[in-house]
Image 1: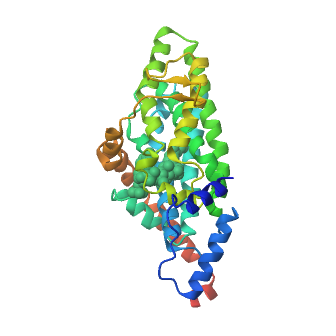
Image 2: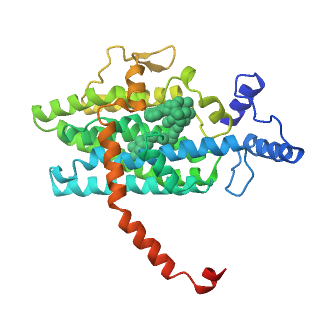
Image 3: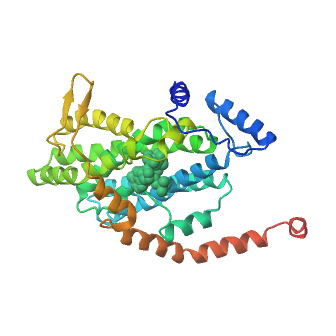
Length: 338
Ligand code: 3HC
């Protein structure tokens, strides 16, 4: 269905042009086979020929996604030692470990495209590679942990379920398990907030305060408006993205409003209202200048997050060295000689 929509865009000249400039006859044939498979909604696998721009786009998106998962462990990791009960601590530990696992699947998926984990990590540590804006905000109270589960993971699921149908096989397959786990994350967050909302007035106030601080950041997390999103048209054409940033943002708003009502919190947007004609909720203006500030490294926690990642990497050097020494020791003699 989305591929048909993309075809129409391409025919009407609205989609990004196909990368066919200056191809050899052989490459033109490969390009045609690649385009056919994309048009038929087929999968591209690591050993298949692919245009260089497709490969680069995937390395960019998958590595940024992997970085987001591992940087995303930090804001909530901050609460593991302060969780209010053993049960909440066990849930939070499992969730943060899941995020680490997601990062590892995604780094592996990116490696199938010819990049290395060391290169990707260098890019993260030097500040060259992006990761999600949302993880550059502080987690001030326990309610933030619930709100991150409900809203941040809820937004992540909205964005990531369509990636299970991404045209690149390893990325699509990695996302199936990631989405199942994210779904548990979203539910544990919502359940934790439900408990707080049935507690004292101070607990309800704490939840509302956390919702007020995270709501707009979650809307921005879907990325710039379609008109300002340089990668969307080509990403859609290639079947990497299945919905645009604005489409996913709208789905998220529509899904979240009834959940907020049930929870008993107010979403901090006076312009948020149902629009009968559109069949969707209208919502207020997002502060895009704040979003770009954060993406460009000037959010409240950017420095702290990167410093924590660099320190973890440095502290883990001995593990990598030991693993490499162990592997060398156990490499069969014939393989060494070859
Ligand atoms: N934070 C930081 N940078 C962002 C961003 C965000 N929230 N949204 C967009 N950007 C960046 C893009 O990476 C791009 O930068 P680049 O060209 O230098 O790489 C630029 O802003 C323009 O944006 P586009 O819309 O043109 O870029 P894309 O077409 O790549 O769309 C995206 C951006 C929607 C984030 C897309 O890359 C995507 O769907 N990625 C996969 C999902 C992902 O990475 N999610 C991050 C959150 S993961 C998470 O939340 C973990 C979970 O456990 C909670």
